[in-house]
Length: 251
Length: 208
Figure 1 (tube, rainbow over the protein chains, first blue to last red):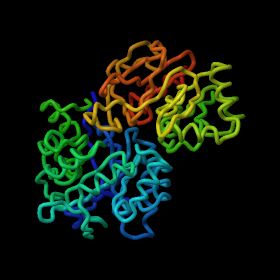
Figure 2 (figure 1 turned 120 degrees about the horizontal axis):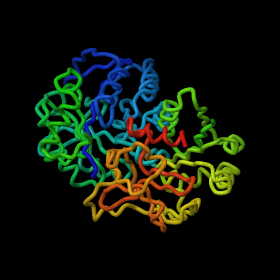
Figure 3 (figure 1 turned 90 degrees about the vertical axis):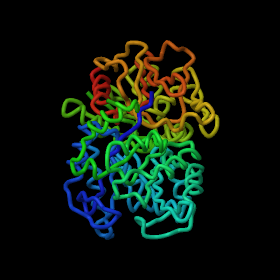
Figure 4 (figure 1 turned 45 degrees about the vertical axis):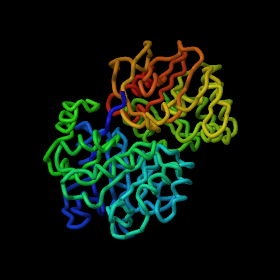
């Protein structure tokens, strides 16, 4: 039986791990390679790096981080943040990323998803959707949540599936950093309209939130940062917790 | 000993290279190449594959003499070869991803889309799933039955002769996830991404 995945996410800026609260107010918290290794040794089903490096001159640092990590971690490694072009994707994959997550570029130029999934295979193309509730619908935001697009998140999700995305990483901008749980409504709606796996993200504050993302949000995988990062819970504790609720988990 | 990972522009093979190098340490030389002379002289060959069946077969054909060299290596000389993911799928006679495409024809059978029971099962089949070992395979030495492996695929290999099947996994139906036919081995899952247990499979192959 296919297991639900727990994915710790490391926000990386200038080659160092940070965690944003609502995408601002960053705290420095260590070396991404070491952190990733701790997670994979601890049973993480996958590791995610989100590169939030702002300046262009420091953008290449992430390649080195990915290269070092992929030599130490033998579980899937997903890298996102600032991925714009086929060339960016190709570089990350060559450095040892297994999947690349595309966000802003997938909105501005959806063809990049089509072309890249054809070229590299759907299995390595994850489309990240940052959505915020506006009135009674969800809207896509880009550039790390700064720019409004007026695009309906559900329509975008469907289009990305049609364009060949292998997975969707759905982040609720309203919930991210709040530690009050995933936006279950958003996650379950998207999961019900597409036939590709959904990774729920944004808002995890306790282990029940992870369980809710899978059971109620219909997510195949759950992504969290701070609950693991600051040692509140270990991956092992999370897995034990989910197992007790009869959620299929890789022991 | 030389183990060659065939680099034929089949998509991302960095993880395959990293994992084989990790297991080989200094004992075994890991070569990554599409050079047919190097492949001919190597002791073992790894055939990775990502993307579609069609694109992988085309990429193989684009390298002059490569298909013949692999045929000679695996079929005529019967040297050990491990196919991973689409690398395994290409053993088939035919694949139906994108369009009907002829495979290598090493293990008779076809590659078709996983029946997801009208959307009941999401595709691709991504994540960790357990393998059910149905026959002893050299690459499964010291691998416990029901071990978890990492999968990512939407198509499955259906061999005509079921005796080649060494393991299956349960996703909407029993999917063939490992085959062994004499010197030819294949895994639908990714041992290179399957943590320590996956590295053990790689080590078993290197130690053959």
